[in-house]
Length: 311
Ligand code: GLV
Image (cartoon, protein in one colour):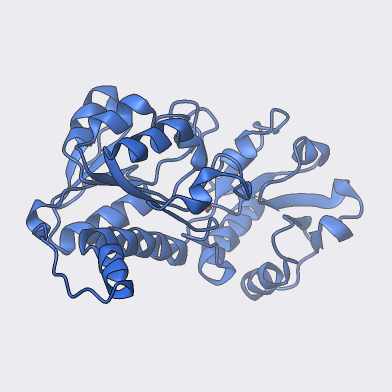
């Protein structure tokens, strides 16, 4: 039998991954952290938040697969064997969940649902002023597969939609900005900001006091990317001053979000526990199966990660 496939994650018991990989590859030597056995046998590591240094201890490892679309959890390991190809899952199911998450919070803000919920509690029949869809500008930071799907769906709903990315990109029906020069222009025209950037050296802390101040007064912030993008004190100050009207946050600098963190009870903040997009082995496995077949046939891998850019 070919080399072993190790499931390196404590999130689940790995049974679902084992099933979908067997369906695609036939009988496999599948190991988990508890049944890892001789590390020399392991050829492929499917990893989510591996313990730092662990991946470097498999002497015959030939491919690392990130079980998340984000790979910062791997690149944070300074012993990561970067000479071994790193690939990541591409999961249409996860992409769809992410865009749903953004659309849900954007519409909830756009249609003032929280204001109406408060009116209901007060038994107040009180129609609010509203902003036309064609005047509510959505901005999506990050134009990879998730950002493009999200931006395209907002545009289809009739919102003027823009996207920002590190390098220039073209997306149908979406105005695009790029690079450091484009960032301030992008923020200044954005009423609802959706963050789907990867976490890299360049994006850590990108949402600082200056970035929040560049957004128009009353802007809303949706973060479904990584908490490390946000300088929390800056966001809290912008919420306090009213410059930012609210935020829906799925990701945090420290996860789980500590019990004493002000976000938990902030009246303008919605907190969800990193659930915007969950990897589903059923939708994520075809690319992984394909890559394991390619690896074994000596063919070029797909969905490669460049450790230098961080995505
Ligand atoms: C989840 O956060 C992912 O990176 O897929």
